[in-house]
Amino acid sequence: MAKIPDDAEAIFTKQANISVATASKDGKPNSSYVRFWWFQDDKVVLINNFMDKTRKNMKETSWASVSAYDMDIHKAYQFKGTVEFKTEGPEYERGKAMAKKIFEERGMQLPAKEAIILTVKEVYYLQPGPEAGKLVE
Image 1: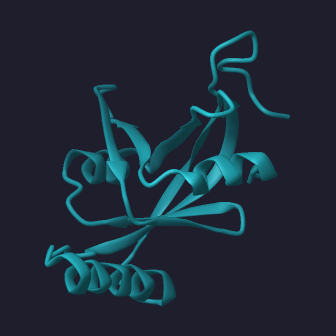
Image 2: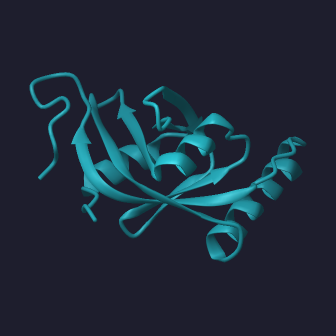
């Protein structure tokens, strides 16, 4: 498991949505975004509301990546890791509560089907410049 840098956590937390990327077992890429997410130790919890291809790819390969970019300081990170799915427990319940709050505030029905726990295995710099794409050590 990789350590999430403190400044990376701040960059991600600043974003409303984060980018999620996957690939099928045949290597076909897919990109999406997630609104309900949070850090839990050196893991990222994602709530699946409407994932289709993203979820299928995760199930096939057990891997995903998430990324975020802070336009104000021009710094970005990508986390790659393995995923597990939970349809019960505290992560799932927190996702259900988030969906309920959105429904109460905005009338938008979100299913919060499951919690997806991404265990971060690799952290990369993603901002433009000489460190882009380099592994954070």
